[in-house]
Image (tube, rainbow, N blue to C red; front, side, top):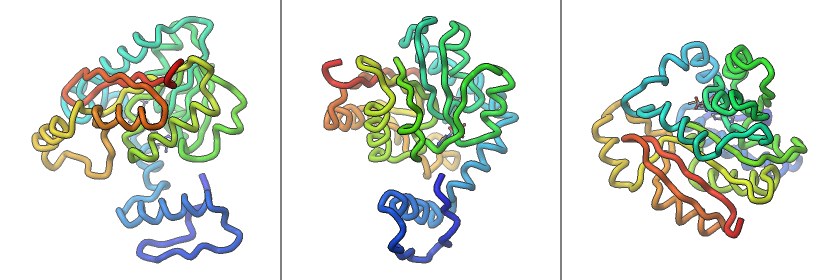
Length: 249
Ligand SMILES: C[S@@+](CC[C@H](N)C(=O)[O-])C[C@H]1O[C@@H](n2cnc3c(N)ncnc32)[C@H](O)[C@@H]1O
C-alpha cells in the first residue's frame, strides 16, 4: 500500500515533482474511490471486521451474492487437480476456504490478502500456510521471487474494473506464473449482461453498485485481446469459474 492519506474527498490533487507516475495513478484511483465514499483503508477495515464471521456468512449461501459458494470453490480445485508437487498462489485468500482444498492434498499454497484479520483466521486454521499481507494492485509480486504452477482466486477480483483485472492478469503471468501455468478464477459472474441484469433486478436494493462483476462473453473477448485464451462455466445464479491461460501454452 502506498501512503494515500494525503488527499481529501472533492479536492483535485496536484502531482508534485517527487511523486512517480505509478504512485500518482494510485493517488488518482484513491481520489475516485473517496468520491464514491470508500477509501482503500475503509475497505480493508470492512474485511477486517468481517473476518470473524465470514465463514458463517458465505458457506451454504443460496442467494446473491454467494449463491453456490462451496460449489465454485470445489470446482476450482477439481479443475486444478491438486497434487503434492504443485505450488499454488491464492489471490485474496481470506480465511483460507479455497486454500484448504489444496492444503488437504499437501499442495504448497501461498495466500495473498490485504486484510490482516482475514489472514489471522486463515493462519488459525492452517498454521503452516504461507501468507503475504499486500494489496493485490500494489508492488508485491515483483519482489516475491517465486513462480507458481497455478494461480487461483475466489470472490475477489470483482473488486476491480475490467482494465484493472486484465492488467493484474498480465502482471501475474509475467512475474509469477510458470510456463504452461494457468489461472483458475471463481467469482460473482454472469454469462451475459442480460443475465446480470436479471439477478440485479431480483436482488433489488441488496445489489452492490460498487463492484465490477464479470460478464463472461465480454471477458473472453478482453482476454483474447491481451493474448490469453479463456473458458467459462456458470455454476449458480451468480457464480462461475474462468480458466485462463496464455495462448499457445
Ligand atoms: C469475499 S472475500 C473472499 C475470500 C476467499 N477467497 C474466499 O473465497 O472465501 C474477499 C477477500 O479479498 C481480499 N481483498 C479484496 N481486495 C483486495 C486487494 N486489493 N488486495 C488484497 N486483498 C484483497 C479481502 O481482504 C478478502 O479477504
